[in-house]
Length: 404
Image (spheres, rainbow, N blue to C red):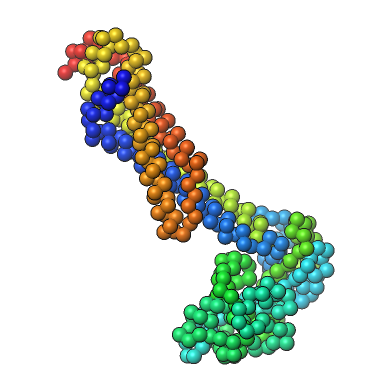
């Protein structure tokens, strides 16, 4: 039997190589697609693991990520809520709330030594921002009495301008051509932040912080409103119930306005669900590649049956049974599938590591992706060889021996 299989592979090396190549590419595609999808899933999960899970973000409008809280009527109102100090007091009185930090953000142009750049500016209550206070690398954090003082990110200090911006330097901010001068009093540490403070995934290095009083004057609008409340709770296990209380208490002041309360956990849950779908969709694309390879193998084996009719007839004349011939062809297809799958997995692992290093994703070669690749490869080749095997087994020995 092994000689028969070996003879089948050697009879036309080019056809064997081409059919094997289809399976190799298919298995490689499955391993790479699953690995890249898993790497993306793991990388995003690790990135979001740094988020504070004990913080609720209360925002105007609606930003549902799957979390509880609020009724559809409130979330679908036409007008976003306008948050003021009155809402700060409401949130501070919610049972379970530890701290309420209101923030207002806008885009500005920064001018320093005749060089301009742009960044995100956030107005804060200095006494409510202990986390930011702990991130100051040089100088100091803002105080409640600061008016034209500013704390800047490390990137603004070190990289944005030709010269280093240090505590004591003067910078000018422009908002809609409205200028306002500030004195730098502090520079933050160099690190990344994924949060709602200045946009998801923004770097702390490009952030600017001033007091709400200074922000109010810079904006120059008739009324000053907060963009978001960062609400810290005592017990993260009570987030859902606290969100319900927040939504209910705010409803008294914003009955016909839209507002929402979300957490990093809400967003992470929905994002992970989406990434899971992407991961399996990528695997499906790889499976299609493998199916194409299987069709190629079926075609090659059908041609092999035609080319080896006399050989099959000789085996039948010498006493080989129908099952022997069928088994030999299936075994030939199975061996081709195993060898091709192993090669495909080796190449798939190498390509996955290469993509991971280029894209900056963690390598995620899982045993499941390898097993799935082998399983699909062997099954595809075996199924592809089933019809040619039956056709070979059913040949009439006498007619086969007459064939040229």
